Amino acid sequence: MSYKLEVIAFTIESCEFIQQSGAHRIELCDNAMEGGTTPSYGMIKAAREKVSIDLFPIIRPRGGDFLYSEDEFKIILQDVKLCKELGCNGVVTGLLNADGGIDIKRTAQIVEAAHPMQVTFHRAFDRCKDPLEAVEQLVQLGCSRILTSGQQPLAVQGADLIAQLVKAADKKIIIMPGSGVRKDNIKMLADTTGAVEFHTSLRSYAKSKMKYDHPAFAASEESYTHPAVIKEEIEALLNALNN
Image 1 (tube, rainbow, N blue to C red):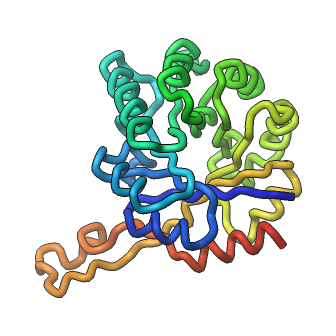
Image 2: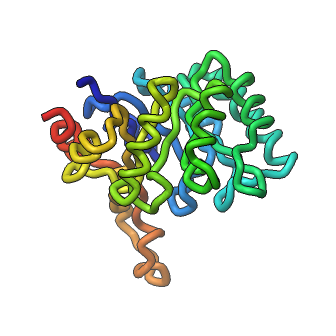
């Protein structure tokens, strides 16, 4: 079986480590504490110049829910177009209606604006009211994959639904498990769900190289750490998946 692994990067250094590890795709994000928002133009440009593996920036103008105003949607469309101009391979986004259904009209506009880039519908999917109906809708809209934890906080908790989604997708769209995917459960997820692509953050925190810590903020971890990935941990996860 040929598997693919997508890893989140919050820093340019992480992009390099992800590529060096042998992972296949980067989901580029900002603002880890908000679950990931759209990275800056400068960050996307730098990442595209730094790595040759597939690069998929998340297009999410804010944290919180996935019900967007008209102004927010205009921002989303503009960011999608910028990603295409910068040579990204795809984008990651997700929009819902207030009733919990997929925002079909706007998602169609995003897929059209993104072409020929791929569009991954992210874990907004896990908040929709009818996941099996949503799979069919996203196939018809032309999305390439769905990132899901099976409508549970962690993919291992939603494995049964993920398996149903993989079967329902029938290879017309990729179902990609994510959330809590680690080396000790990725093979089980592959075996029980039938999924062939996986998503992980493997997020750790790098300590600041500052030599001076202002005493008023010495106890503030967020002042002196930032999200990071460890290349060896990605390699270990890939090894667990492929053996």
